[in-house]
Length: 120
Image (cartoon, rainbow, N blue to C red):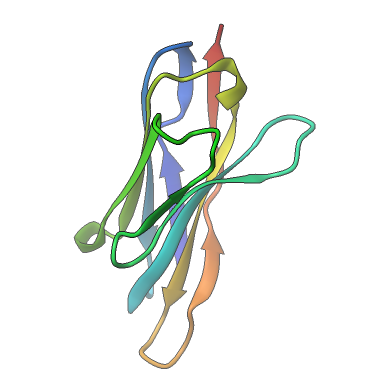
């Protein structure tokens, strides 16, 4: 199973970006998915999660500005980020809990990071 994150870039404060995370490979079902971020010199932190029934959870720092969603038919998760702030600058990574067969899993997989830089 591979996760491919994309959509990062350089944006001015107040701007928007949309991240995508596409899963591929031997997938029977994807359960929880999530976005995490790590800023230079800081620990990785949870940004948002979404369950298979579309229940969502957000870090307090992004509530009201970020929206997580998923397209199960495409095995893809999204993170719409609005009103970006300089403190949102980080490498954003995605994760997915994947059942590879009906009886095996779920196993947690990670995608590579995508850099988000917000200039003030």
